[in-house]
Image 1 (cartoon, rainbow, N blue to C red):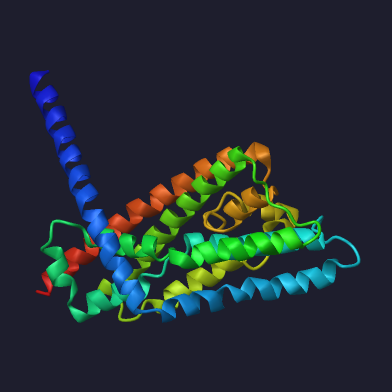
Image 2: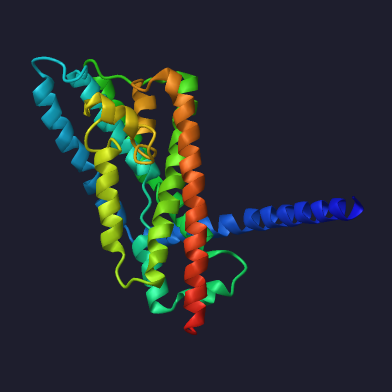
Length: 283
């Protein structure tokens, strides 16, 4: 019993020390990531251009809904949905595959493996900084767009906003672990961008970024909400626009968290296997 108690205290002490270390490391990582992002301002321009795609889809659906609602969506509903999708996508999007692949392929990963801080924290800090000022600009633009559109509305009740923040946090983590898993395939494959692009297309189509899930056939839509595809876009958007089934929101958040945990475990296993292969060839 005494040995078990000592072992438990040792593990707890180790976790506390690790938490303190990360607490000191993250401000440095975030500052470095911000300086790096500031040096590549074109990234912000690309992000703004990518945000235009849902607006094209919004214009198409608005035209179709002018005479009568489409699957219950009015023109105001489509405006609210797609403007929310633009904002949410920026809040949850992660783009680390290319950088991670290049780090592995070039051999620059080797120094990172000698450091006490896992390289994943470096990339996660970059992902956090990637939100940047563009999120504030989008929030302002989206808010104005909804306010000026008749029939468009967001559910701004405190409970809904809290659930929206939780959904976005889960979506961000899910995107990060998926991207980290795909990027880690660079240990075995020379090009992984194609895999990342294919996954993003499928997720955009089945995850509510291109078409709201409510417009799919009812049987397919009821199945899709429990898959990982809607975690990073459809679920937060539906919460913000008040279109999510209130009875399902908590369950969908829990399922989303479970998918994220499963993805995190998978990312860890792929990374470990890749590092072993990387070390075996003397990199």
